[in-house]
Length: 233
Image 1 (cartoon, rainbow, N blue to C red):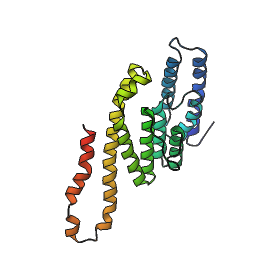
Image 2: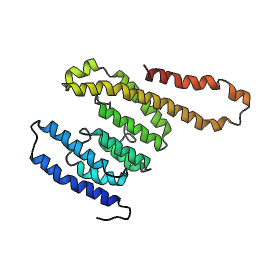
Image 3: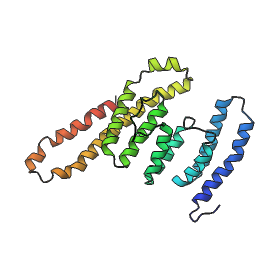
Image 4: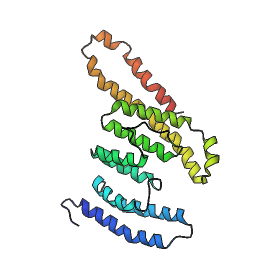
């Protein structure tokens, strides 16, 4: 394959060079079983992607092949990174397609079901909130990230962990990841509300200075302080 800018060639090379090791791994299963085999596959595909340009089109071609053997749950980091690449490249529809496919529903068309206890599901919802903000759906993004922060705060590990039979490493990841993600949500919520407030300021610039000054500093402080306090607990 050839392409003027080389992106398709890079994608084809990465995907093709991965097929042979992938087949070998499938036919020669490691002693650790399926879990260890998946870890090796994830590591191999991450190395392949690390050698690719940070280009949404390249990643799309490689991930089409990769999805034959690995799901989102096997490697959420890569799929979230791909959605981020699409968003920053201005490919809003592709970013939305990736996220809705992994979520299993379209948040823009249907009410979101209750979030599961898994960290991956909550990270997807956080990524969708960022997508909504980038797409200009400011109020929707703010509401989604506020709801997610509340849902994360309501998670009770004492009830969840005994019923899931997770490995110690998985428990540690969940217990550390949930508070970290909630802090991100709260800080993002404060940033977005401030940005929206600043964007709306032009509507009030024609008002007399006395009316503009009333409560200005206190209002800004009251907007951010609660979220900063919660995020740094």
